[in-house]
Length: 275
Image 1: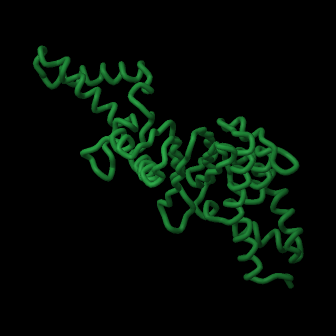
Image 2 (image 1 turned 135 degrees about the vertical axis):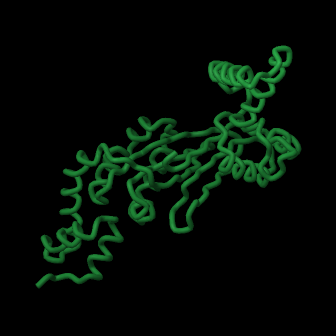
């Protein structure tokens, strides 16, 4: 007779985020000893990590840490929403964010090499993935510097941890407007801070495209330069934060809103899980 109950299986599964069948088998093998069952699941999971390497990770969470005048934003990915909301996975994300922020990591490679416990972040993720039984992947890391920061973490589902994370670095004293701009970024998804930051090659590619479109539409040749520039400017309003129409008042640009509030946005980062 097994020395555990259905409640024990459920509790261990919720603790580790492991599958029902694997959890039950581990408890059976361990004769109900929870610590031994955890070790069994970990060893089994370590063997399975390589097999899971090609699996997709479309779920997960974002987390941010502010340390020493810098903010580090991290996206940790997993396979299922069941694991994404599991306490063990959330705790792992916190440890990864702490380690990445401690070394001001600005790349996945730097974060994975950061010290964590007795090893590195890479080893920590591998060990935890073995227990959880899913592929776990550190997908993105970014560290920002600035005078002040506003961090906005948005839940796309009330049952899941934050799926969109935004950090705004700014100078000035209006934190409320900075937070509003962070919320705008979460919705509008700009790629660059300012018009001047858009790579020239990208601008020229867009100019070529809208020129071809305008010609195919039969626009008069004399008006073509003005039409093309208008469409290129519309492109800037899509990709450059300061050029965008402000989400709360589309009669104003984000640049105008910041100027009126006496703040200067110096940098930003936006991560969305799976995007």
